Figure 1 (spheres, helix red, strand yellow):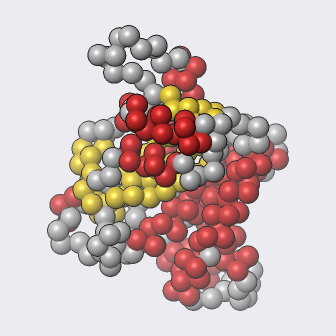
Figure 2 (cartoon, rainbow, N blue to C red):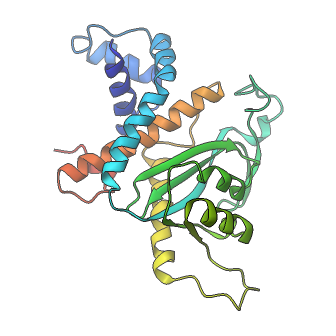
Length: 265
């Protein structure tokens, strides 16, 4: 199999909601044997997909940049990515090959519960199209990732976040270094500051809907990987599959974020 076929199969299976490699290769060997005469072994496919992760991300970025052409307003948020049940935190050996990249315990303010794993940080346009992403330990606070936003390639734009990103120091640093204006809701004790615009509050719901779609159709929170790289490449493929479905809708003059019906005839 060529590298292009590996990338295509990796993204397409996520777009179809197939996140189990065992199930995927079982279907290919039984139902589509003649269509894939050069089908490689599942373990070989998995290793090659990990090595091609950077290329998959570049393809995702190129499509997303085309869809985001002319955008100057973006949304930032994070979503929990658990790797196992919290009760198995101490006994689990998943993703613990390196202490610095090992999963950790974190708190989800949306679910109001603790979990064990990672946190996916995502920046999208107001249309819901990918712009930048990163993966950190669940214990890392959202505001800490703002240091990396300076190196995401964004500049001279507005980024909308929730109260978790509220910090005068970080807002000033982003504006001075990249001309990025970070807009967040104010706390109740900040009466003297201007209120959060209603248009920003409505725009921020787009990324929350995107996370719901990722958890539903792409099964973001279901983990089969055993290493940090495995988790990372799965997340990259899931995000890329969303961008691919949005591009298909764009080409067919359909609503951009109707992902479930993007591949329907």
